[in-house]
Length: 312
Image 1 (cartoon, rainbow, N blue to C red):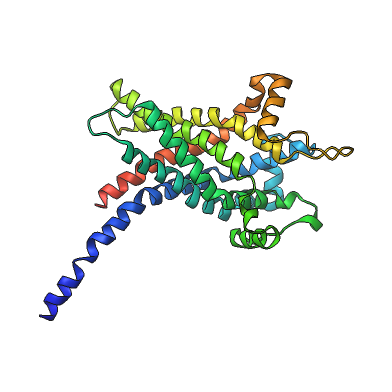
Image 2: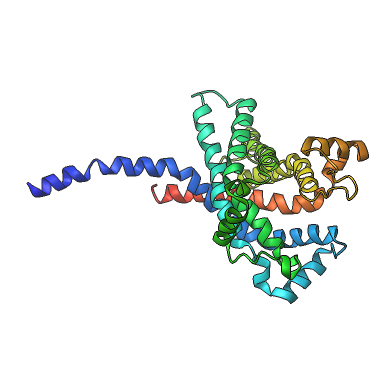
């Protein structure tokens, strides 16, 4: 009777464990995919941050010169500075971005109906915006950790890792300090998600309609390349404005900032150089964004296949 009691007690636990796994699977898949991509792209990102900051301060903007300098100063580990914050951000941000998108798409599906473009758009935009707010603290820590060694010694924050960065920001700026820049970050994330996930779904369907085998390497790689382009194309204007707003300095005489906010900044840029000014530096940005988007999407596909082969 004891054995029977044990069996009866053991049975109810199984569905709840499977339910928890089913609920968390899309998020875990997203976190894993984003982390794989970040480990591959982190050195490029480090060079990009150095170029952006160096360029603003009259330093070298040549990627090869910047890479050589980095390797000379810090060795190969210098290329991975801020990796702990980068991976923390992927776990929260990409996990939420890809996980929520899958969940929203599942909820929006009508059996036997082809998903209309507007539904895909709504799913991608809402997943991107919500995930950016969740990932903002890690994003802020990452930017500060990457640029810290360029500050004068007296002004350095010397964060030991992502946990130390979090606690220092809360101590000095309050909890709200962790969400600094959340609005422009969320707007950029919505645009990026729309380009990356929305167009990955559309490209996969279009390629399948053209006779490319579903789930084949051609379909996965082709769709991710198209998605990588659109992710860069839609998010660069927001990224450009975000950078201008973040580095704006008040006028020494009047003490006024050059723009009232992101929208005013965008309008001023368009007045100065037309709409195309918002796409300044597209080739460099594309090299940074597209590979990350592509590796994330290809990894996501492989991780999903891995769960299937493991019977999960």
